[in-house]
Image 1 (tube, rainbow, N blue to C red):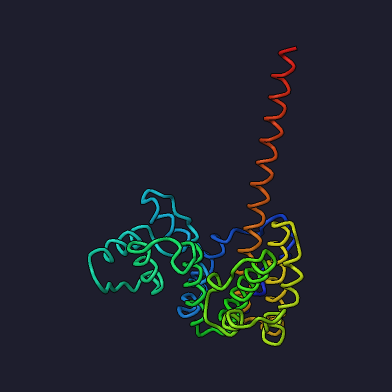
Image 2: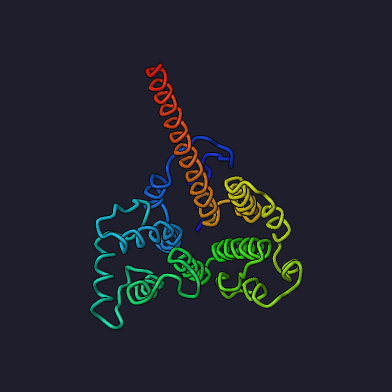
Length: 278
């Protein structure tokens, strides 16, 4: 399905923007009345990243406040967890299949299964879930993110003389190659198009700047893949990915600005207190 009016009306956004044209939540609500049912289901999978956070928050604290950008309600989460406790093979079509697997592991296992923390385990399951999407753009996006994370993990571990095999997630070609190759480039130069750029990003010592460069790579990837997708759902999906990245960085910058402001005020107060002692 083509979305001429929707896409023609989308604002131009750049990676360095400091203001949002609208929030991710607002855009999600707008799309609910525009997209076809199949495309809406596809878009909902893009918001499961927030549901992942909500699931972890709920499992750790049943009174936790959930992120409104998620697609799964508090009641559905509660019902799912309770059902898993009571039924061997629960069925709940309102919950993605990988949630079932993760909740069982969480309730019966220990953090660090296969050396991964809960967040990493859930992220791995989410990538596997996206890789089953019938939409090629979404599959390739998931694979890109998986490849970037795995490659950065391997590069960092090798640089520090640490074992990295237990931390490689997924079973695609890049993951399998990372597990088996002893080559200087991990055998990735010919199979991972972005490998050289990821290797350059790994050389960045500032962790925040490194993360920004990773998102810039993803942003550029969207532009390249969508060059000839003018009014299709892929253009909408790409815009959502960009808006999610932009919102995250603007919020992070706002939080950091708040921290700096508080530090300045505290220093001023401390200075006043010291002066009063003179």
